[in-house]
Image (cartoon, one colour):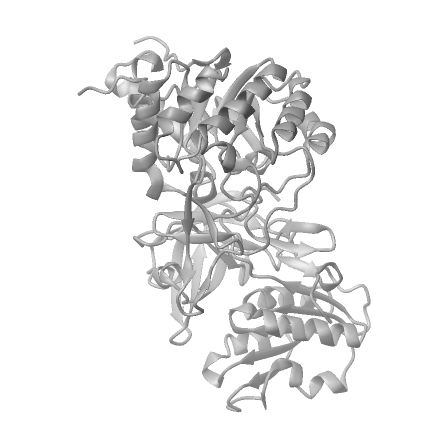
Length: 305
Length: 258
């Protein structure tokens, strides 16, 4: 059997393998440099970036739940100008695809941020986050309304010339409808799912655990929902789908590929096992060898009924 | 120091009382240097309800024997599960994480180390380091009752120990910040770890007496190494991670009142 081919293409973005890390779970990559060579990954999504500095939500921002966790970080970041001047120079030497997750409260903010990132030669794609459940304005509001989603994706498409991926919210009745709107509005790919809106209560104190009362649920608890949504969306659109939601192991990742995802993102698993993403990549290779599969393309959407 | 993921082997699990165990474990490979105040993320194997690792202070480290101690308070499912680990069990840890306490700038006066509850854990290895650097550490340890005072013999081997208990079963009655010692001596630097109300009272005393003071915070966290931004503390510099820029903070950087 020849060399394994793990390369995939997301709307023009070439990845050497389908394993990426999810925005907000991987910092700017350097947090993981002690544990393994992140250049071996297909790509990394750096922290959610907004036009201006954001302090994020007050502490407490996290509640552990069975097989998962709720977070309410609220897009804490120093703004896109700080990213360009102080963080991106440190990313120039990376030999993995570095994508910026772009956020905003208004269409204008999304557009301005995307314009600035468009000028960065080392960033081949953005992930337009219209699905963050932890900000008061914007974020998920754009991802739960087909009309709003259309407006923001079209506006960003006009100014952003490279690969545009739209990150979808699971907090909708019909995620396939929003995916179709993103496709029709010019997206090169969609990624899903962002976190599910949830809540945790401390019964003894009779108070909510999170400062924001509600937060975003992630981890293995959401995997069956994520898998179902990826499967639905993959059938609804022609553009590539990036699947995520509770992926902890290579087997989880393979399931998403079979359901129709062209690539996957590892998120919350990074917190529990710092080497989760690279372990998953090696596990996919092992799976392919064991099944005599030479190209990862032969797994994508290969679910048998 | 480079962070490592290591499978430790449990060499002892000592029940200190109903609520606390001391787990000793050794590493098959050289343990990285761990400083007082730093912590490890312990993976909880065998609990169906626990998803995240548990951040636990380095209580003691002996690099010559590759041995590290973790003082564990049984709070929820995760720490209860860790408390059942037996000799020979594999304990997967990520360490060292976080920052460390600074050494006192003066050399003549004594440093005061104030610990309450499980917060005494980092005070033990800090006391060892201070002693190695020629200081005479004074420990002030508080608990509800005599049986909740932990590792007293280990502390006594490193310096002078004063205690308070809420039920008057050991040392002076009341809280650490009511101890008569605080009106009798001056300290070059104060270090504290324990329940937040206790640390706030210690910080207040430090401000009143114009003494340098560092506290170790126990904010809930997911990753422990700066990726999730969940454990933030609001400081004079904005929200910063307790896991990477802390857990040790100078009280002047915190927005605690008084």
